Amino acid sequence: MRLVTWNINSLRLRLPLLQRLVQEEQPDVICLQEIKVQDSEFPEEGVKSLGYPHVLRHGMKGYNGVAILSRLEFLAKDPQNWCAKDDSRHGRVILPGDLDLQNFYVPAGGDIPDAKKNVKFAHKLQFLDEMNAYFRKRRTKQKSIMVGDLNIAPLEHDVWSHKQLLDVVSHTPIEVEKLTSIKKAGKWVDAVRHFVPEDQKLFSWWSYRSPDWTKNDRGRRLDHIWVTPDLQKSLKRARIRKDMRAWAQPSDHVAVVLDFD
DNA sequence: ATGGTGGTCCTACCA
Image (tube, rainbow, N blue to C red; front, side, top):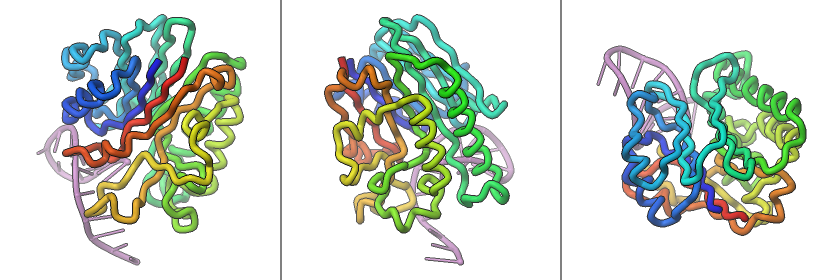
């Protein structure tokens, strides 16, 4: 089984890049974030012709939006709202074998890491609290995977400079603490760090706001794949497709690829 | 301390 998560930053604009990714990886399931297309404009035929007849889409006009594309049928699908907002940040499917798969697009949180001065940061923290409550409340679930652009780089070597990013939204102590708490609540295993030691730098995002993204490699690991402990022994391989950042007209995020039995 | 680029949609907003 091959699973991919990718913040595509506009599905319609980057459908050709999705096609290239499909040709190169042949994933069974693809979780997308920031599709930036409302459901009525969703490129249904384009996605199906890539070999994905089963689609969950949860979009809105202009912003956000997630989708799950699958070669396997869904036993159930269930997009969900968070923070009492209909802002298209989540989708969940059950795959054959009762594999539970959740796809999240956590709010980025704006520029100022202070919930009193910045409502976007307050929204991000509230979203994380709701995720925590959700995973704490549901029974210990097996065969469960959660992926997405979580907009937090939790570990010291998930950012290019731990010291310089301590006060930068995505790597502040309060965000890291809340994400770590969610991880504990769901007993999640970080499927990528399962294969890559924590002292090794690892990024999935490089800002557009740099004339040369390769210079000094100033990235962050914002995109994640977590699995429940029962799946840990099934994990085969995980990769972050850094090379995709050098594609023509790229997303600022690259795909994370997981192989498992 | 500041501004840098790229997406949607049409005037700013968001990343």
